[in-house]
Length: 444
Image (cartoon, rainbow, N blue to C red; front, top):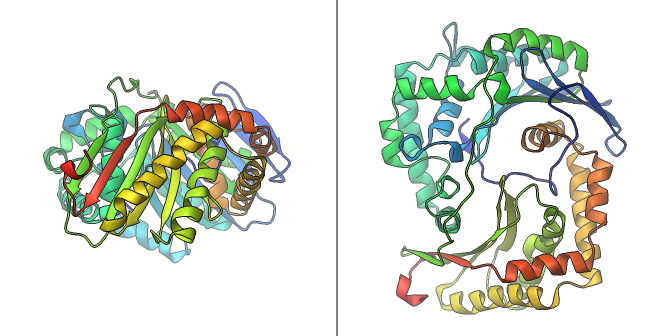
């Protein structure tokens, strides 16, 4: 428990189909399953996907609140709660929960992002009632004992130090902070040492009471299950937490910063070049998925081939896209020897410029489409990935997109579409984050 994440989706534009106000059904040919969504009487949104050959089931509860929904004084509250809920209930200790899940070979964990928090458990389908008991209990009646709060506070402070000690993590976090300055999206999910140290039991309880209500929850399940039976069991366990709604949010309104440098006597310099990109609701996200793969999303990408394979300037280089509610980010991450830093930066910026000027080729489009298609379909072989796809889709988009429809959106992307997005991105102000044996003046 206690993992954190910042990426929103693991498949291209993880979307879904369903409606908040009534039951709905989506027949997914590629997945050979029927996805069902339903708003239960208690207010929770339920989405399920059966898997015919599975003998297990993965359950996840998605809370529509993350670190961007905290004020500065309570920064880190979502992640703090993620730790605390697994500490048990008034009648069920943390050890009781761990022993019960361990006895049936189950796996449970949680993670916090900037826009949501997820608690999940995977176990044999015959043990589904236990999984519902565990998730139902910790999500509706956590103990939040003072002694547990103090113990986890130190664990989280150590976690913050651990991330700060990892130069590549620090470079990435710095970049996001510079892309969205003076905005909650730019804050670290873990919170700051000062805010975590100051969070007390009353504030944590108030945060739980406000955000952990069924109107702000999605429960997703994939594997060997029956939707009707699961709905009845979920209704019974969550009926006492009705009410609530998703948090209100404001978009970033401050320009991105261009440079942030942290001096560290490291053997490598860690560089992240970032720029603002379309959000998760933009139709440009499909073209951005293709563009990202061409730029640095795979071993055939331009940056990997030029910087790693041809010039040998870095062991690892990649690009990634992140989508938030109203905005997103495209980043290039690389670690290289200090003497190669300027050359690598010139190559990265040059490739971004080339994409804006010339776009991509038909062959690059074909490779990217094929990769994204296979990545999506391969993920459907795992109940955890299916649970994640349908749960995040319903929470973030309000519906679950049919897999064939999702693939069709990617297949419909043209060279011209990618060129249009590339030109828009080329005009965006770029942010450079540096961690290594340099000072700010070295890059100004």
